[in-house]
Structure formats: structure tokens, C-alpha cells
Amino acid sequence: MMELLMYKLSELWYWLKDVVTDSVKLFYFLVGGLMIVFSIFAVEAKKTVDALIALSAVSLLSVLIFIMLRAPDVAITEAAVGSGLASAVMLFALWKTKVGEKK
Amino acid sequence: MRRIWALLIVWIFLSFLINNVLPILPEFGKFDFFMRAIFDIIHKSTKDNYEPVEFKKSANREDGSANVVTSIVVNYRSFDTLGEVTVLFTAALGVGILSASLKRKSFLEFDEHFVLKIATGIILPLILLFGAYIFIHGHLTPGGGFPGGTVIALGMLLLMLSDKQFKVTDVAKHTEQVAGSGYVVVGLLGMALSGVFLMNFLPTGVVGNLFSAGVVPIVYVLIGFKVGAELSSIISEMKEG
Amino acid sequence: MVYNIAFIIMGIGIYGIVSQKNLFKQLISLSLIDTGVNIFIIGLGYLEGMEAPIYSAITPVAKFVDPLPQALVLTAIVIGVGTLALGAMLLVHISEQYGSVDPDEIRVAKEVIE
Image 1 (cartoon, helix red, strand yellow):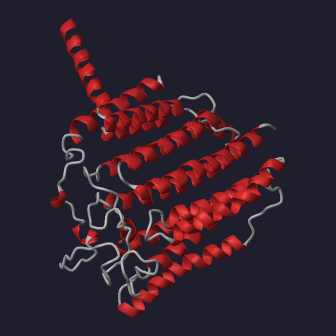
Image 2: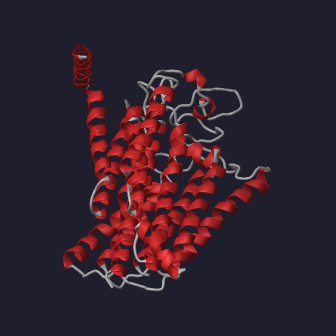
Image 3: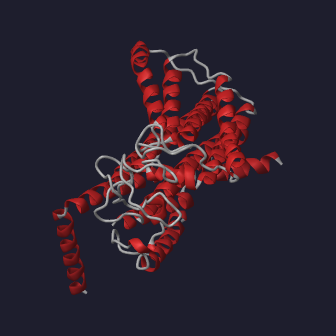
């Protein structure tokens, strides 16, 4: 039982060493890890406004991945649409429901 | 209790994807060019004579735009772009109908701030110029009609936030109607002159010039106007009841 | 490695739809699933050592990655925004008629009305 745990830990250590020495894999690892942390925050936030800002951050980080995968058309479209338009539309809708609830 | 059910469902879904789908896919980034069907599109001819295409040297191809993604979206799969324009129109129609039948009309009021006013006066012409540059040069640089229209709509949003008395009037609706039906008219002209709906009927020049690629720049200018007017009217309907 | 990132983001989006009790949060998780699927499709078309698919002074002859998935994803992003706008407007209507955006309270309010 202890040997299985030590084997899995040593596999993890060698995978981490391989990621850190190759700079393309390090880029994917950091950006991907940051995206996963922000998306968990977007699902489990207490207020809805915080979840909206985290969704906009996930959209902007995905633009970096699109540039690394050599797709400039898709990167420009996702940057213009995901950061400006989605946030503005949802913010106006949230404001309207709160104004109605205060009565 | 809900979280435990949710974790179970996500566990089943992820294990199916990682164990059954990931081994079937080809390895990430390996060169398997002959199993992909894009030889015809990259060499700009679907009739089996593959001469190599060079920047600013080859002339009179089937579709002479320098951006390969543009030539797929507007020339070879132009009917799908017509469908996408229809989907955006349906969404704007739904927002307009739902917003007019609200009983409690509440206006969102902002206070005016003089720093925002002065900064808007400096930066708004640059935003509109940048948006127009993106959709006019759609066949030479990355971009096209859809991000160009979005940047113009974001410029209208800035103007709405800084000035209390700015309203999007009926000019946006008329622009959208004219540009949307202009796309169908271009298709019908292609049908009258060459027998196929949405055919490229203007001459295609040298690959890389501004006046090249036939019908493609005209279609992208029309799409840029339509998307810009549509998104500004969606934002304006949501702001004022 | 890109495939694993896309699958995990899709999984987090599905968890958000099943377990959250606020209708606005469910709409945000739907947009997360859209983002994950777009990353997966473009990751399928990457070839090692090739450049972006535009004829220019840097690449005068064809040495491109696969441009076909990029054309499909361009349409999918715009349709995702249209869905988000219509869904937000529907939620404003629901909250005005029943008083809240919680599915349990809406069920109670519906039985009171009938």
C-alpha cells in the first residue's frame, strides 16, 4: 500500500520536472491551471456579480490559448465578444432584477 | 445532497471521456496531412490542377483572398454564414419583443462625470475607425465582419454610459434591414449571372491586393454594418425598459 | 495537454448546472461549457511547426495549420452570445412575474397563483 503511494508520487514528481523544463508545456500548465481555478470560483461564489467577473476572466485567458494554437481570427472574435458584450448584457439584466425586488 | 449527485454525474462523464475518447484521437500535433480534406481550399482550386499559390504573384484563382479562413466562411460555405446572420436576427427580435411587454418599466440612471466625458471625446473616433478597419480588410488580415461589428457596438456603449441624453434611434433599425437584405440580393445576383445561388461573380485579382477576391469584401462590409447595428440595439433595449 | 484542460472545464460547467440553485448561475455555467468545447475543437486542428493560415510576407507559400475547425468555431462563438442575451432577457421577465430567481420559490409561487 505504501509502495503504491510512493510510486504515484514519484511519477508525479517526474511529470512536474518534465513540464518545468519545456517552456511551451509550462505555458499551457500555468494558463490552464489559472483557468480551472477561476472557473471553480465562478460556480461557487456567493454573490452573482463575482461569478460574472470570473467568467470574463476565463474568456480572456482562453484568448491566450487560441493564440498559442495559431488561430488569430478566433482570438480577435473571442476577445471582442467575451470581454465586452457578455459582461454588459448580463450586468444590465442583473441590475433590472434587483431594482424590481426592492419594492 | 445535490452536490453529491452532481459530483457523481461529473465523475461518470469525465471518466467516459478520458478513457474511451482520448485514445482514439490522433496525437496532439502530429503531421497527418493526407487524411485531412483541405488540400483544395489551401491551394485555392477545386478542379484538380494544383499550382502553388504565392503571395502577390498568382492571379485569377477561383477565390483570391489571402486569408484562408475568410475564403471558407464567405465563399465556400456562404450559406452557413447566411444561417448565422438569421440566428443573430432572431435573438435581437426576441429581446425586442420581450422588452416591450414588461409592465414595470425601470430606467437605469447613471450620474454624469466630467472625466468620462472628456475621455470619450478623445477616444471614440479611434474606436470607430478601428472597427471599420477590421471589417474592411477582412480578406487580408485576421478579423472580418463579426468582430468589426462588435467593436462598433462597444463604441456605442461607451457613448451611452457617458451621456445621459443619448438614445439609439430608428436609424439603427433601418441600417440593419438594408444590410441584411443586401446579403440576399448579392446572392440572387450571383444566381442571375452564373446559375448558382451566392456564386462569386466579380473578377478576382492578384492575391494580396485590396481590390481582390470578388464578392468577399462587399459581403463583409454588409455583415459589419448589420452586426454593429443589431448589437447596439440589443444593448439599448436592455438599458431602457 | 490541451484536451485535458478542455474536458475539465466542461466537467465544471456540468457540475454548475446540476448543483446550483440560482438561475443566473446556471446561465453562467452554460457559457462555461461553450468555452470548453471551442478550445477542444481548435486543439484538434494544430499541426506542429506550421504557422497561422494567412498568405503574407512572412509565409508566402502554404505552410499552414488546419483552417477548417477555425471557420466552424467562428460561427459557434457568435451563436453563444446570442443565446446568452436571449436567456438573460427571459430571466428578467420571470423575476418580474414570480418575484425571485430561485426554482423552489417559483414552484411555490405558481401553486399560490392557481
